[in-house]
Length: 249
Image (cartoon, rainbow, N blue to C red; front, side, top):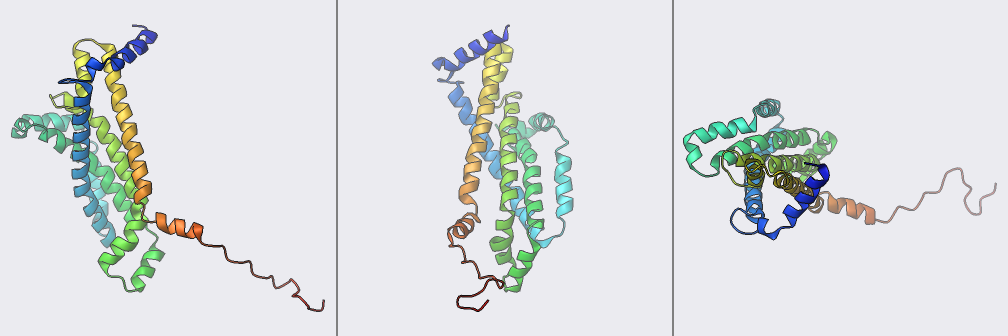
């Protein structure tokens, strides 16, 4: 099939309202995809972030946890998905998919949050400790705001990876936009396959955009930077070499 025909046919497939509505339509698959993404990302954050923040705060055991989580990246997500599908969990709906994707999302969240905590400006941290802040106050009011940029980078990375990987859920019979792609493969419908891939890519970009906006709105240092920009500049001091008014040269 010529490239021009594929582009035209893909556009026609996307413009056909019948492909979007009804059981198995794009809207239904999109809802499944978003639900799985949000559920898996929320569970991964609930597991990885508290652990990483605590280990980064106490400065012990974090390197081991990060290395173990990075080893988990070497395990193919699809292999975990298939193995879990063969266990009794396979009879419980989307649980195999959720567990596999949570395991896939934990490493970038854990690594970025831990590194962000350990790379927080130690001078600022020690100054806060010298002011009498308790351990929890030091964590929430000093270390966490300083680590926030790297934490959000990990969240964005994990979210985009999960959006792309949820597509694999369709192979063992799960939901999501991957079902659009697998249905196209079964019927040798190349425009449908391309359309499904474009939809996944568009969703990943949309999720990235939403998280970038959330990053800017939730940044705990945002108000401080705005206050500093709004503060009037200090008047320049008179140079010691310049003669004062009325002085005899």
